[in-house]
Amino acid sequence: MSSVELKAAEYPIYKIFSDEYAFTIPNVQRPYSWTVENAEVLLDDLLDFIETYKISTIEQMNPYFLGSIVLIKEKGPESQVLDGQQRLTTLTILLAVLREWLPANISEELKGFLYEKGNSLRGTSDRYRLTLRDRDAEFFREYIQKDDGIKKLIAGIVPENDSQEAILKNALMYYKRIEKLTEAERIDLARFIVTKCFLVVVSTPDFDSAYRIFSVLNDRGLDLSHADILKAEIIGKIPKHLQDTYNQKWEDAEEYLGRDEFNELFGHIRMIYRKQKLRTTIIKEFREYVPYSSNPVDFIERKLVPFSNAFKEIINASYEGSKITDEINNLFTWLQKIDNRDWLPAAILYLSKHRNDPDQLLKFFTDLERLAMGMMILRYNINERIERYRLLLTEIENDNDLFTKTSSLQLTDDEKNRIINQLNGDIYLIKKIRLPILLRLDSVLSDGQASYNYKTITVEHVLPQNPKEDSQWIKWFPSQEERQYYVHKLANLVLLSRQKNSQANNYEFEVKKQKYFSTSSGVSSFVLTTQVLQEKEWTPELLKKRQKKLLDTLIKTWRLK
Image (cartoon, rainbow, N blue to C red; front, side):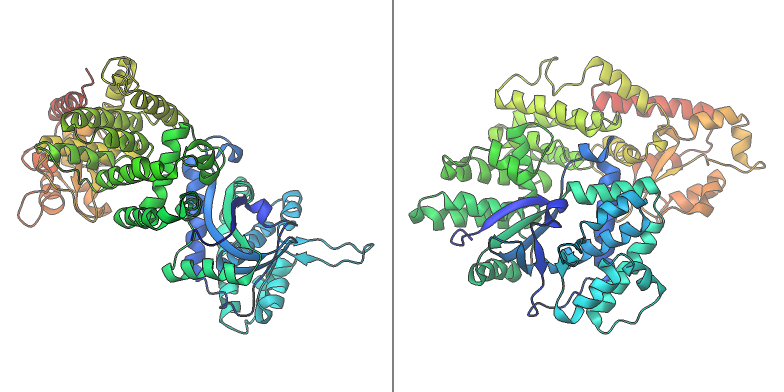
């Protein structure tokens, strides 16, 4: 890659579908072939990202990386697409469908991303942002890009070939999916795509260079990643007689870690140096804040390779070299149960600095797991988490004492009290934390001997949420207020390695134990559930004692008092 001259930059979709580019798909390209499943995954990923990370407005969200496109492009807007046809075509279909469902003023604005409107006074006609191969270009214009195209498509048309059928099916799927969204969700989706979705545009002015780039991607069957772009830059800055050596070191690190995780690593390295939430794009901030230009050899030797090794050991729980290896790896496993990965930069940095001091590693990761779990339990948002980890990264970098009460690694007294209150509350109703907490609790009760390698693990109630009036449950819990108090508490929850069974929810206690909670051997794989199997009745008095015992176990585990 380093021998290929290229321009590579990330651009938002509003720059991609603008007057700066006039994309054409050469006839030598294979036809459009994305299936409904491919197209739906794209939409699901976008909607999930918005739902997960939107705090207040779309404008405040992190950028979303859509992959790369490879172009043959000189100085003008004309751009032949050598790689990226499927993505550009599918995005155009999605924008065209959104145009049909948005309010008139926003719909009008969206048209500009589909075509440049002609001017009768200047004698110009509409210029479409994307022109497909000759066999499909007219179909695409008529039924996707033109203002009334989607309406014609919905009314019913007969495609002439497989690529046109794929366009038709994906447009119909998007139409049905967008129809189910609220107007506010549609507007958010359109704004997110246009302003926060980015493509890496790799362009060269001649076919030979573009083809060499495309060949590398095509041989690997992969998109150009952050790592690929930065590799070209960093290896290119190394003296030529050393380039082969460090190219091999780079590729060894990528192969050892795996391509997806290696690409993810660059986001974590950015955070280690930037110590702020991503404001623009990973590549832009990596270039600005990570000091690799002045000494690229040192960056690979002392940062990239050690960080890569640390990341691998954390995500695989494969640290070696000590009697307490199992304890450290166990903490790595629990950290990965958390519903975010914001803790990883601090973990990578600390492990890479202290890998030869296992006692210190055990101490640090015990407290990091407590901090990360605590913030998850308290439902800290991304801004609160990033600020906490920013402080922690600075302390690690400066070799501060992380085990004093004032360190950002340590929970404050107020946080400890709030965590206890949350754990003593209706845990079941907080969907994202109930399973990690119960698994952690079960592990402590089993002295770390339990295994959780099940395809499915669910959280179930013992006392049903809606017991029948003539059931034993009502005799034990005649007060509805008392039932409501206990039903979603830790004490009333168990783990099962099976899917939920709505019919089993209201079984009587003995039947529920035998048919639902037990395995064929008459026991359960989980200590929490086995404890329930040993009980003869399920009363408020028992639940009160059980709640205190389980809560005290977690308080002791995480040193909350």
